Amino acid sequence: MRIEDVLKELRQEVTILLVTNLVQQARRLADRTAFFLNGECVEVGITEDLFTGEVKDQRTRDYVEGRFG
Image (cartoon, rainbow, N blue to C red; front, side, top):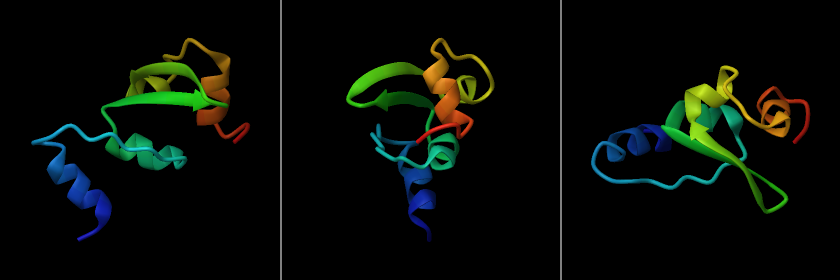
């Protein structure tokens, strides 16, 4: 069983805080996502919203779309 599969099972019973720099992993696993840049919390929101255009800060959009990072 892959680590991501274990996390998907566990998240049904407990809260998990996952720190990753892998954007697609965050999209696969997280219900909510916080984007940090240089120690600053830039944006927090429902994961799918952050990946489909519902962002408040252009830096979040740039990171999600691979323009930097």
